[in-house]
Length: 459
Image: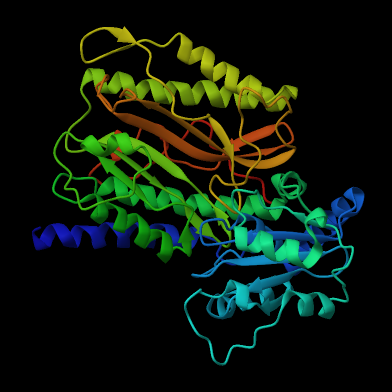
């Protein structure tokens, strides 16, 4: 790689950061008062169902529940958990190393923290760590394990077996139950502060994507393109990401959400890009598909345009459902109806319908897509929430179940985040649906913005 080309990466990143940095409010965070209000809501729900203690677990992969309860959105290495009694503050349960980091979370939210040996890295030794047992933690909180009804609000596929056995040995198998919806339904509805933070997260997402588009040039590797997005996100205040930054080119398009690799971008490659900055605990997201070094040919353009048209159909359905209070599966039905009538030319010259790889709308917040509730499917008959943040994630795959290419594009996607407040809906992201004209250059977006973009009205 010529030195001039490598310098282009930093030049692009520096320009994007310089333009965007003054527009980001890095000070906006969830206050202790809001955390206390969250605990009160959860405790009221616990009381209504007869639960005495709530338990959620977390890891670097599954952060949402503990992040929402205690601000523990930046865990490191070890697993951890949070218990919330029917009265009082939650307690973060951590290992020795990760506990140092989670002390910051406890300070942020006002939660307590305790170190348990059960959460340490299994083959390490911590001579000076002051571990306590779960029984002592309960005693400090004025609780006895005898007769307590414990609700595990994390999904069963997330809770480690060792933690389940710990709970059952302390409280008895009959007193440990799973009820993930208890927490999911509460944190599905967002406060104005949450939606405002996500607005900042998506400003970061747009800036980082603009940088990656500018360096989607033949000769760079996928990782070099991703490095620009990652650098911009961190420089603008995003500490980590909801998923590893996605850059898939050429044949790697069939990985759909594959991370960037050292594969060199070639002229004419179809490239899918995606990123999700974590900003003060909340997520932004943006994904797009383009062609490197040359405009898409007519057949490729029709395939990509079909995804953009699907976006329009789905967002129009979202707006209609919000205005009329329709069941949320109306949105799914409209998207499926569009796909049923879609016909695109295959590589063999026939007309056929490509398939969507997943649902069109999913929930987001303290994770990019792992909130466990709120995705729009054919079976969700409830209306969308009153005040929520969601993602529109529309895509089509151009290969069959064996990976054989059927259409001229392996995978194309448009994903953005949007907010809903009452009957009002707005997409956070400003980037247009089609961003091909932004590939390989730093031209300003100008007035060519997402037709559904609307700033969340912060009061």
